[in-house]
Length: 125
Image (cartoon, rainbow, N blue to C red):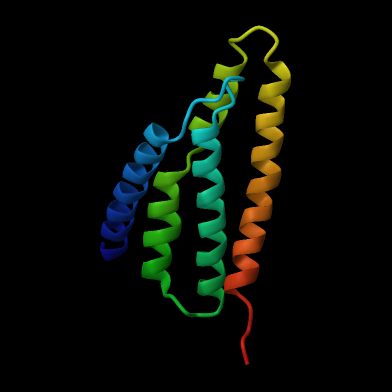
């Protein structure tokens, strides 16, 4: 039950953080959903860091549930990711922007997780 409470609190923090980010990031002229993109990349980087810390046993399952499932789950969301692409396609000639958004999100998100994991999982002597 304690894990559920940690996920609940972390999810609230992540969702509030996402909303604050959404209202503070400017809208792009080409309709690229920069707010969703930034939220997902930040969450990917932080998730990589949390995963590395868990692997090194620097945090326990409770903190992993709080951060990885709760905060990062609330901050990033697949439905917003896909919705951003659908919204872009409503504009004439924006197909390439939508495809670019999808590809950049996946590639940079992967790189962000890898970097975060590598940095936090580095063994220091």
